[in-house]
Image (cartoon, rainbow over all chains, first blue to last red; front, top):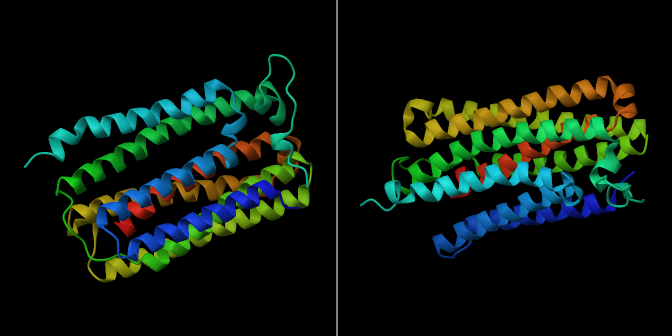
Length: 88
Length: 200
């Protein structure tokens, strides 16, 4: 017994994984490759969260619990950029 | 076959997710597991942020190439296990006990396969002298992948318990969903660790 929607999501995840691997060896600028890899990782995360973790049909409270820490982590990271990355 | 996870109607005052998984107890459990996952996001997020900052700031140093082939196979294994886990929940929702047991068993085997490949990878790296004391990168590498592997192990134990107690799980399918939420989170962590450590 297979659920067609989940199967499609899985195939998409594998295709995106293959794209990430290809970008690791593709003759493109390093920054472009890294940017694309993490964009792909973000898309895979959304696919898993929305379809496999059923965020698509959850109430707002679950969204809030899930998204607030993600926003905090990303915010903290960029807040620290001037102290660690832009120091020369 | 029909996909009830996306069709279940909600009664007034009840979300579709709540209606689908069996009421108040399920929603309480779901909120609890999401709170737990929120703390896990902060834990892994803190580690990943530290690594990104150290790497971009030059503090993590350079490192010898890792075994991308093994890591790619492990990525395939974890993505597939996420799929089988959600199928186990779909089967549980339909009261399909053999289906739930089959998909849970595949998920457990995939988790064990992931851990086996990780042990193989670690042993090769340590044999070549790449221990945690080798430098900044290796400290981060062993901390992040080790903590992730520990989470995989916990997931394997939880899924094995559901497999053994299939009768109870089929009566309360939301338990399979809660275990699945944790398992998918572990998958998401690896989705970021893989390019971060192996491809960049």
